[in-house]
Image 1 (tube, one colour):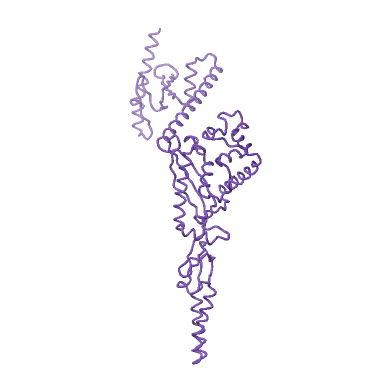
Image 2: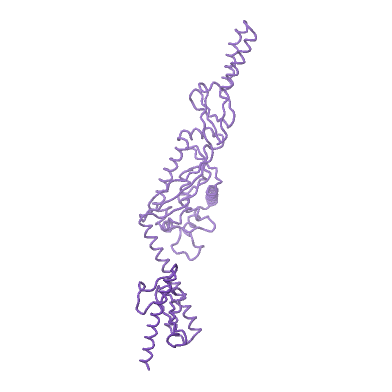
Length: 432
């Protein structure tokens, strides 16, 4: 079509130039060259390469199934007769908004899905796929369509009593199952077909190596025993269904293997599967996370916290028992109470405060050392807490004090030491 229009235009230019030749050959050539230059300049159009683009040719306002590649293209009499529509064809990475759905136990779960796709699908219908892409609304339209489709299919899967999870706990470990059903919802017949009334997710678990465990719903359907003694007894019910196929067993196995290969390729970002209705090619698809939401999430967090605390307490008790046993083995005469106290000090459960009483003024001839174990009390070498005193009455830390303040504190502590020594002497006299 473009060639025909070009021939017609050059013919018209010649027709216009011939009458002028009767006046002046030079003038005729000048007219021919000027009109030709104007026509060619108008007809050459560039499709940008950065970012990568393709273009759909338009003739008299109608889109044609003709793709213009990046670079210079011939578009005669643009934009009145021929024109083109640019389409950016770089990869689109789409992280869908978290989808909130409910499992059969009415718990809320959220699924985060990410996919990478490319406008158009290579092949003989490439132009048609780009037109379908435009009909969908371009990138914005495809994004919305994918989001709506996945949200609807995810909701159906979560509530299903066959292919879905039985509760939120099972849903948390069902990313692969969710991926498989969502891919089928998007790609449809582009994925290898599996001819069976039994959900394909069950067959994929059955043929996987090692075999994946069944869900509670699949156990209820009788495809696997509730408490298999070993992995060999998994899927015994589905094994019976498989054996009943007789000559069709190999066909089903090949179909399932092909589906598993396709899912693996798409998970790894090596997919080239067409979504013809949207006019795109799916390259990668992953279910990044499935998490519990709402009140169920709070309850689960509380339960997990209690379990962690119980494990910590159990481990701590075992460590304390080992310490006590070791202490008493090293000193058989040590009492249980003393061993417990020392073990707790070593664990940091209680702090040991050492009080040094200066005895030079009383004639003791040596220092008297008293050790007090107090719950949660830090070592305070700068002060001398009196018996029965509280934390508030204990001397404060002496960092940053002046010389006079040090002297004053020294005199105060000295008087306190003398009082304690005097009380000790009186107790000794009373004993004697």
